[in-house]
Image 1: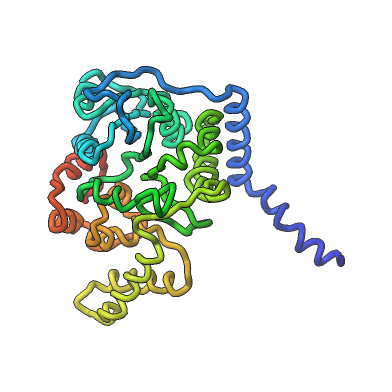
Image 2: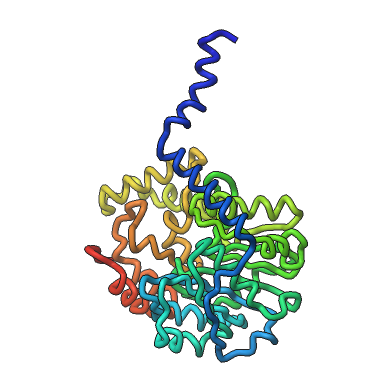
Length: 350
């Protein structure tokens, strides 16, 4: 190998060595993993409270995770618990909040089988695991949903959707999937059927859990990596609203409707549509919950990601029309969302 080729081959490792931000991230991941390994698999639950339903008799359970700076149980979260309960799920509410006032616990109690307050270690996946271990008879479970409060809804009854996500087609279901980095089910909603719950690898995952306090580790190993690991162990995974169908529907709508030439649309809107179409044609992955949020709701999708409204990460124009989209396509009261946005938003009107 010539010295020039050797230098070109070596420059990427050296670039990483001198990339301070990336180096710090890897060091933080490794440190957190070592600490979690040394501590061992332990629960971060501080305290639990019984709800109004007998959890010991439940065979279909939902673990719902929430976080709020002041431990508030917002109205949209109560509505979400009601939706899960109406779909035949016994709800375990797990709060990762730094505080959890008694008044907020009492607000949640009528809608839960169990309430747990834990230290926010391991983020949502750590809370999922701790909530799962609170099920008194794990072997009794026929299905388990793990879900977090990063979504508003449900705009539609969940029971028909859950019925569509049957064990005949897949052992683990997500609402949506993503091809970012590699194909995976998006982790804000995951449904495990009995075949997955009783799989030795899945049971070992809960039992030997490491409460790693690194967001990048959680994202890579669990939010993105979990689906591949499930499939590696022979479990079938599927999404109720597959990305490939969403991107095809979007591209066909834009082209057939000649939207790029429609001057009644603002220029900024047409520019975004053109960029999305370029991504679709190039096979570049887009987050379906961000790019196709309105299209999904029109199709009966029951949720809207909170960050679409709180930060609008892709710069979606006319986002203020979200409440009309929700009201026109569901019986859900958009004021539940508005009240939450008033409580958490600063210098932003949505």
